[in-house]
Image (tube, rainbow, N blue to C red; front, side, top):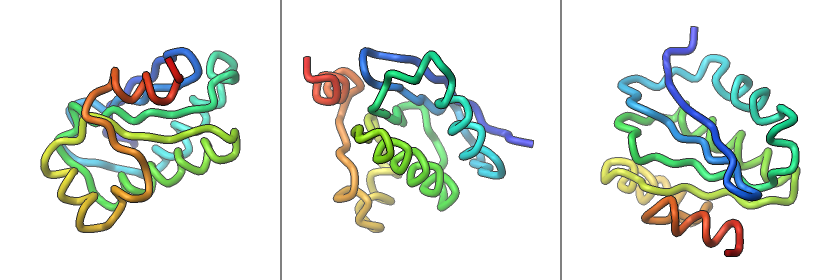
Length: 119
């Protein structure tokens, strides 16, 4: 059973995935669940994915696995993948693991969407 919470929404050409209030991150099936959800018709025209981490209060290697899966999905659509609103602990994890150089990270959702959607 997936014990995590997220929401998805569309902003122009970008799917925004926002994780909410996660105290533990269980990945069993989450990557597949998200991939299936993002494959729905309402998301078909979107090529970019933005992961909003503003409310994320826990992350581990399973979270990174989900990010890698979402990033690959963007690559398949020739889109762009980015993150925004990283909490201090997650910024430290990204620095230590050097993931900060893999994907663009924006301070705010608005800044990320302006860059991703080109407006």
